[in-house]
Image (cartoon, rainbow, N blue to C red):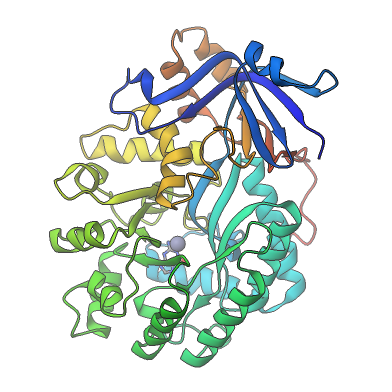
Amino acid sequence: MKPKLLRGRVLSFHRAPVSLDDYSSFHFEGDGAVIVEDGIIIAFGSYDQVKLMAPNDIEEVDHRPNLLMPGFIDMHVHLPQMQVIASYAPNLLEWLSNYTFPAELRFADQIHSERIAARFCDELISNGTTTAAAFCSVHPVSVDALMGEAARRNMLIIGGKVMMDRNAPEGLRDTPQAAYDDTAALIRRWNGVARNHVAITPRFAITSTPAQMEAASALVGEWPDLYVQTHLSENLDEIRFSCELYPSAKDYTDIYTSFGLMHSKTLLGHCIHLSERERDVLNETGAVAVHCPTSNLFLGSGLAPLNELQTRGRPVRVGFATDVGAGTSFSMLRTMDEAYKVQQLLGTRLNPLQSFHHITLGNAQALGLEQRIGTLAVGSDADIVVLDTHATFAMRLKMEAVSSLTEELFVLQTLGDDRSVVETYVAGRPSKRPTTSTRVEGSAC
Ligand code: GUN
Ligand code: ZN
């Protein structure tokens, strides 16, 4: 791919901000630029400096006055739940049986899987998200669809076939052996192809027998460097039922620990109701608590105490995610707006620098991928989002009263969504498609 110079205001973090005026935690240029070549960032800084390094005939894309940031990272989202989003249900377990499992059954079909995988990647990109850790359905074909689509776009996707052999309807249950064989085959077929990562994905303790947890454990033994993704401590009935199903476990976390599933690449969706002991286990193992605020509010699951998780003597690593379809938006901006409100209800606050750090470098570090994504540093993959902080009438009017970058970021987080995403570069390629107002084919009305 020919090199390209992208000009605009540029913002990239190099560490977690500790306060609202922690200006040394990030690099900001009012007139900045990056050069991308062959999917990699090869220069980053002020426009004047970067321009000096560029060949005379370089293609220049002027995004001023928009803001260039590293592409957003969503650490927990469900591919087969695109049509589950906005389903009316009182709580997690009823939402799963009444809407989610029926929708996931359709992913036995290759055509359906491929259609939704394409729309899933479009929707992520439309919202400025360039990396996602995704749960597919129990059917290997759903993983093939996602991995194939991500590879065609050269998009960094972590994905896995959910392992589930009980407490789910016929057609959504595998067996311990099939889960092992299918996951192993998917790892061999897709892990490391383009930018794909295959994750070992036992859905949660309720839908896996001990024999299936053993199978997951065997996969971790064989592929210790792969991500493990699951759910933990989201809902009080879920916790109670999990502990009934595993009576010898000390608590919910101990179920995963006892099968050797907890390590520094284990991504645990939710972690709302953890005990002190469970938090210590996350601290010791380096497993990541993935906060999904829009989902937690939508299902009434609870308020995740981020401050307690992150700032005590034995801190827990934390990531942020949409959790669509229990989550109500693909936008990491909407996600951080709701994260802010959850913390407000708990009497603490997330400042806007922290929010934008979390959805870029913070999530990259939580994935152990900070050398590749999450910043605009030279050598990183050229995953870049271009943001218009004045995208709507309400934003433009509010911006008249804004006088600092942090205030501007807070408005972007509070009022922004996909309308603020002007362009998304995936490995250097502009990838956001124009939205159309036409109905999705096959819709009921
Ligand atoms: N726990 C087990 N499966 C799911 C799921 O699909 N969504 C959420 N939010 N929680 C779960
Ligand atoms: Zn989930």
